[in-house]
Amino acid sequence: MRFQKTTEYALRVMVFLWNHQGELYSVNRMHKILNIPYKYLGRVMHTLTGAGFLEVQQGKMGGYQINAQKSQIYLYEIIGAIEGLDSYERCVLGFPECSDENPCTLHKIWSNQQPGLKDMVYNVCLNDLGAEYNLKY
Amino acid sequence: MRFQKTTEYALRVMVFLWNHQGELYSVNRMHKILNIPYKYLGRVMHTLTGAGFLEVQQGKMGGYQINAQKSQIYLYEIIGAIEGLDSYERCVLGFPECSDENPCTLHKIWSNQQPGLKDMVYNVCLNDLGAEYNLKY
DNA sequence: TTTAAATACTACTTGTAGGTGGTAAATAAT
DNA sequence: ATTATTTACCACCTACAAGTAGTATTTAAA
Image (tube, rainbow over all chains, first blue to last red; front, top):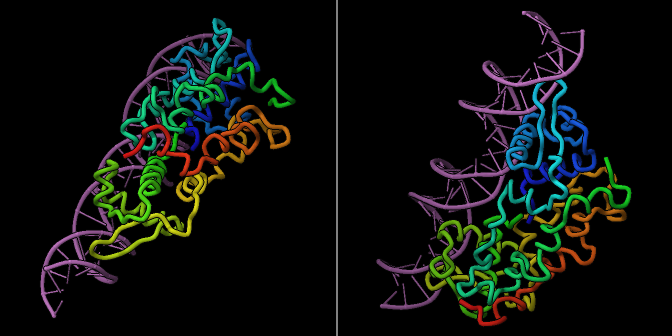
């Protein structure tokens, strides 16, 4: 039970850029700092830009930064852009009668019912992360 | 953020057999009831048997049932047997300083700190599942 | 003892996430 | 203008999860 590697990379780079807003970072700089394969990170950045999270400046001295229009970004937005959020509409355990109205234990956790994964992970926003404790790059 | 398909199959079949203890079920019967590919289910059953969760009777009229020695089985045992549990020892977000003592938000969720995924999913046991509400096969 | 129905086991195929390489296009610095 | 450095884009490679096929072995029923 885990995130896709690509999602992990996306979360990592988004938290990083969120904590360095207003400064352009190239893929080359970030792949060194965050220990993410250079070429692969390029693709992830392209996806995140297409999803509207980032502003990009092409050419020499270019790079990426958080879209200045965004005052907040939730993790479910990022996760959804990479691996989708509709993962567990059906019942994990395969109960034919399992539904939002009549959920099994695992369904409750993956759906938007309380307390669920959504509240623990999806509804965390970037402001909550990284700035806490002394955890920074 | 999801289980591996194989883990999903394993959980499904274990919950099913738990709710039908004392009766032998063949792979052929179960793959029809649980909608799991026949040959693939065979391999999963073999793995679950090797892990000690099941008793097997070979030959005609044979099949699988829950190991009578087991008075309870936790989901973390099943998940661990299929995909391992050491998935997120390192920090998902890549913070170098993130640790059990000084965890980031996501680390707390994946580690054994309260309230965590472990308590929500891993520590659920088979008795808690299926019998609830009217959710049965 | 033969047969049918089941697991055990091995090898192969397929699909996809993860990762690499190369080149075109953009753009700031010179 | 030229050059260096960056993103954009496309094709390919790799590893592994998921799924398939076939045969050997086991065993209860006939």
